Figure 1 (cartoon, rainbow, N blue to C red):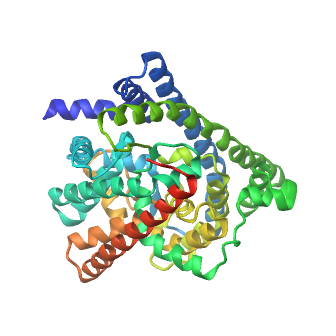
Figure 2: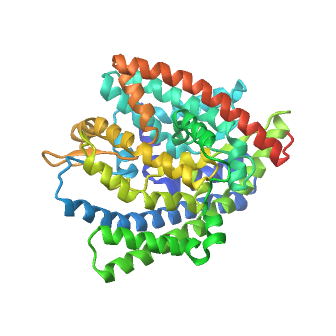
Figure 3: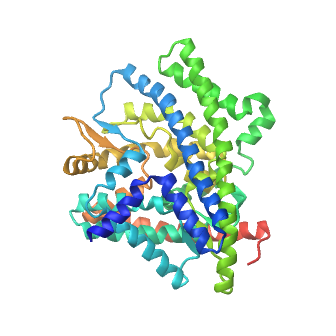
Length: 452
C-alpha cells in the first residue's frame, strides 16, 4: 500500500503543469499520435496552465491586496482566513486516505465506459483533488472515512454524467469539438439550474450585455482592457489607495483581462489534435459510439464575461463578509469567485446580467458554507502539520467548488433533520436538472448540425 501511495503522491507533487503534460502526452500515444505531436500537445497544455496561473496570481496579488486593504480599513475582525483553492486542496491531500481517490476515479471512469454509462474519457485527473476534498470533509464531519470515500465516488459518477449531458453546450461556447467538462463545479447546476430557468421566465432573451455587445454599443468602454482598468481603479479607491496606486492597479487589472483570452487560445492549440485522434481511435474500436475528452474548465477562460463578473463582485463579497451575521470568513485567496461565476456562465450561455444576479444571490451561501467547514480544515491542518495555524485563527475556503452540495452531504452524513430534508430535495433537483440540461443539449446539437 505504501508503494501505491508513494507513486500517486509523486505524481501529485509534480504539480498540475508537469503532471498534465505527461498525462496528455501519454493519452496522445494511446490514441496513436506520433510522439513528437503528442509531446508538443502535452507541453502546450502545460504551458497554457502555467500562463493561466501566472495571470491569476497576478490578478490575486494586486486586486486581492487592494480588497484586503478595504477590509482592514473597516477594523472588523474575522477569525477564519480564506486560503483559496490551491492551499485548500493541498491541505486535503494531507488526509491519510487521500491517495485512494486516484485509483477510485480511474476505476469509476473505466467501468462506466465499459458499461456504456458514459462517453467521457476523463483526462482531468488533477481535479481528483476535489474528490479528496469531498471525502475528507464528509469523513471529518461524520467520523467515518468510508462514508467520505463513498460520497466522493458518487461525485465522480455524477461528474461524468454531467459531462455527457453538456458536451454540445461546451462545444457551442468554446468552438472545440469532441470535448466535455467533468469538473465538479458544474454539479452546482443541480441547484443553480432551477434559478436560471426562473430568470429565463422573468427576463426576455434580449436581456444580455456580454462583452462583445458592450464593445459594439459603447465603443472603447466595452474593450476588455478598458473595463479592467476602470474596475481596477474602483477597487483601488475602495482600498484607500493614493491616486498613483489607483491608476497602477487599473492598468494591472486591464492587463490581466486582456491577457486571459490570449493565454486561453493555447488550450485550443493543445487539445484539438488530441481530441481529433481520440475520436478517430474510439470510432475504429467502438462502432456507433461517440467519445469525448473530459477536460478542466480553463478551456473557457478566453471569455471575458468570467473575469468581468469576478472583479465586479469583489466589493460585494467583502461587504457581505462584513455585514452577514454569523460569518467567520475573511475572503482573500478565493476573491476571484471562479466556482460560482463559471457554472453560471455555462448555464446562462454567457448572459452577463443573469451571471451577475446569480452570483450576488449566491455569495452568502458560499460564506456560510466556508464558515461551516472552517473548523474541519483547521483540525486537519493541526492533525497533519500541513499548515501552521496560529492560535485563535482558523483556515477556510471561500468559493469552494459545489459548496451547497458539500454542505448538504455533510449534514446528511450526520442524519440531521435539515440534512435529510435537503438531501431529498437535492435528489429531486438532480433528476430535474439532468433531464432539463440533456434536453437543452440535444437542441444545441441539432442547432450545430452535428450528426453522429
